[in-house]
Image 1 (cartoon, helix red, strand yellow):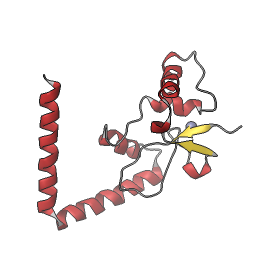
Image 2 (cartoon, rainbow, N blue to C red):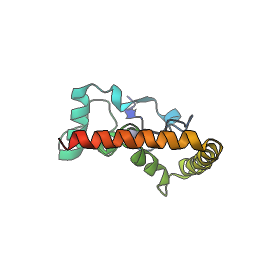
Image 3 (cartoon, rainbow, N blue to C red):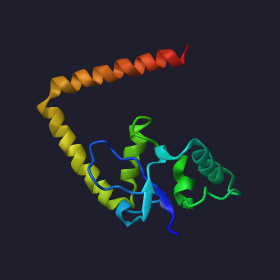
Image 4 (spheres, rainbow, N blue to C red):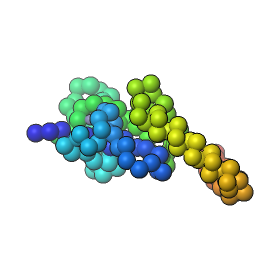
Length: 136
Ligand SMILES: [Zn+2]
């Protein structure tokens, strides 16, 4: 029976180029699911098997996807970690996509500088609020 792979996070603007956490193109995986769709027990078992190396991955899940799940970030949790995987030297097509996307984003910002500035200020306020909450 083919293993179920776990879908890797990607920038929210990107259409297509879906990959598993273990690096397979999604269209070449017989079955692939979003890690967020794992039930909490299966997610905990997947992380546990990677950390302790003595447990088997949950039934039917790809061992390599499970092994790397703890390093896998969501866009909401850490956009830098999501984009960083595209800068990996082995990620040729994703690196090309990221270069094109960053140029397009820069052009978008140049065309709408005031909106960009407002969004940055909004993010800064949110980060400051989050920081003040965590320091309490
Ligand atoms: Zn996999």
